[in-house]
Length: 224
Ligand SMILES: Nc1nc2c(ncn2[C@@H]2O[C@H](COP(=O)(O)OP(=O)(O)OP(=O)(O)O)[C@@H](O)[C@H]2O)c(=O)[nH]1
Ligand SMILES: [Mg+2]
Image (tube, rainbow, N blue to C red; front, side, top):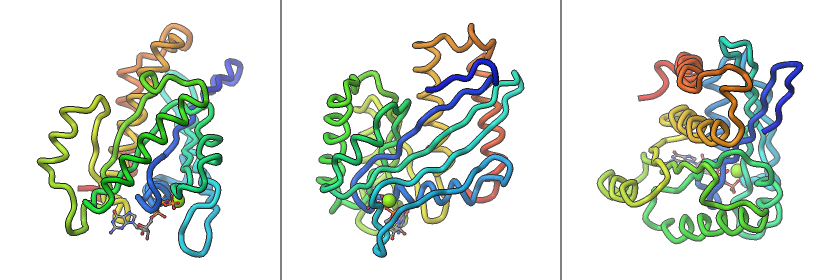
């Protein structure tokens, strides 16, 4: 998190992590097209011809809150392919929160697990305790066949510390809910660590409601 007290501006870094082809870049694309022109910046993507992220994508979003504080979100994706581990670790630096994008297909269960372990290892290598990092999980590609059932996801949700969201990122379904969930988790941690309410006079509950209103307004009719 970066704070510019004079400009009353707060910048939060959120990272979309997960195995190759799980839909991280697709999430950012959907947020970009669901967002209003005033709030979103340009989506920067760096890809090979096969849709594979080589380095990272970045989407800036800015939002005004009633308290007068401007909130800038910088959304990053990491490249999921195993060989790009050093890049993932780099992108993960100074992250305030992580959305782990899992692929719902049964065939991808091992890839999800390996990537999740890789996330924890890279957090540790960056000197961050994974237990303290706000993380939420999205099970994407709910439109495909042979996916983990809703019941299975419910039981995973019961066992895991991280909140679980479902999505079809290619259609924009669940994408904003995931982002809002990520912001909620992240804000809770930042509030605890930095006392933002005291410093900026922002009530976190009210702020979340404002952000939710803005983001949901932008995505109305596009999500189920
Ligand atoms: N059917 C279906 N396909 C999806 C969905 N989300 C993404 N895809 C497809 O999955 C492929 C990979 O999506 P990307 O967003 O590029 O995946 P990524 O996680 O950024 O992959 P890397 O950059 O290699 O880590 C693309 O062909 C997407 O169109 C979804 O919800 N349903
Ligand atoms: Mg990508």
